[in-house]
Amino acid sequence: MTAALARITADSAVDRAVAGRATIGCLILARDAAESVAGVIESLLHQTRVPDVIHVVVSDTSDATVEMASRYAGPRDVITALGAQATRVFVHDIGRSHDAPASALDYGCTLVEGYDYLLGVDGDTIVGERVIEHLESEAMSDTRTLGMFFTLIRHESGEKV
Image (cartoon, rainbow, N blue to C red; front, side, top):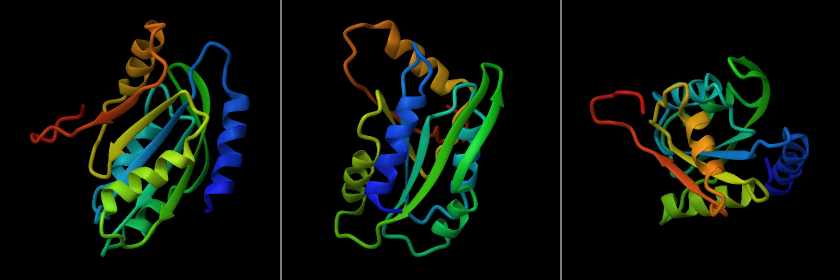
């Protein structure tokens, strides 16, 4: 998927946004995450507030991360406690880089231009089902918030965050 095509999709997601609701672009940054990336995507698809778009950016990987993530690629209609929602999952393999995490983040940021918020999730982070709903509510309750970058980290105990 090229960045240009992803931006066209991002623009259409922004156009479809529900009035009074922020638009959220989600980046999953994954490297050697074949064993965990499916769970990460599933946890995002089972949110009460689903991101408007999910981009899995894979870099410098030596396992089947791309193949595992690609099983989720495409449009998704989700019914949640907050009603019907739609999202789209894209998978991008940016190859090897000497500064892979920074390159993946830089690339990913270009994919969510035009969204109100960027949610960054590591390729091994499983989130609780109301995390995005709560983050959006908190961000929108403060009128001084112009933009926000959320990073969710996994507890060492394996608890959901």
